Amino acid sequence: MTVLHDFPRPDPALVEAFRTQSPATLHEALGRKGAMAHPIKPLYPGMRLCGPALTVSCGPTDNLMIHIAVALAKPGDVLVVDFKGMTEAGPWGDVLTAAAKARGIAGLVIDGCVRDATTIRGMDFPVFCRGTSMKGTNKTDAGGTVNTGIACGGVLVSAGDLVVADDDGVVVVPQAQAADTLAKAAAREAAEEGYREKLGEGETTLTILKLHPYLDAAGITV
Image (cartoon, rainbow, N blue to C red; front, side, top):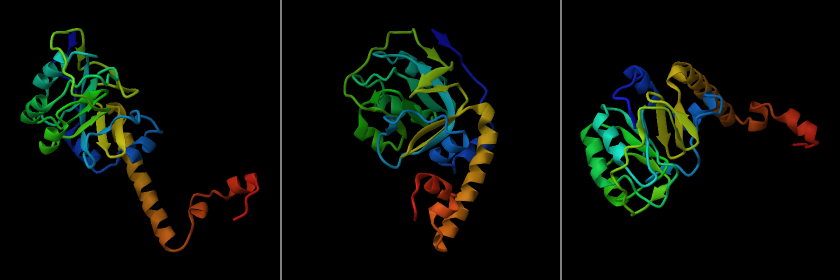
């Protein structure tokens, strides 16, 4: 068992700036990296979260380390759990959700399933997961880790990395690259706003995105 009680968190102002960014834009700004696997989606449409990652590795049939992580969390943290992709158990439910809300945790991302989905929806707590499973777990295995590097949804995640998620999925931005990624995301948004203006004026995406050379190479005339 490895439990690190704390980790360097990004500046709160930087976290706030990320709240206005979409995961898709951040993924592109990061060089098309950091996107978790497609199956990890919001428990219900409309859920969104943003904050520094508090990482957990456990499972696939035990959630003791999740309970430890919740106890160590600080307000604004996003719990990111490597549950080894297990879908035949629900290590997170309404009781842990109540505990997380009481500690100010911003949300949960888990490479696994959760249960008590309807209750969680009513608790207004963002959860991103592989799905739901009513099957319970044990609370006896101390062989996992808290606040160490993990893999979740095919992405390496370190404690303190920025996690942003919405209906499109989850993206992880390494803390060391956060400021640079944010600047590139802002530039991309500005460029796309310009595209929309040109589209409104009658131009096509073929012209705006300079796609004609690809058409010419394929012998396509438009």
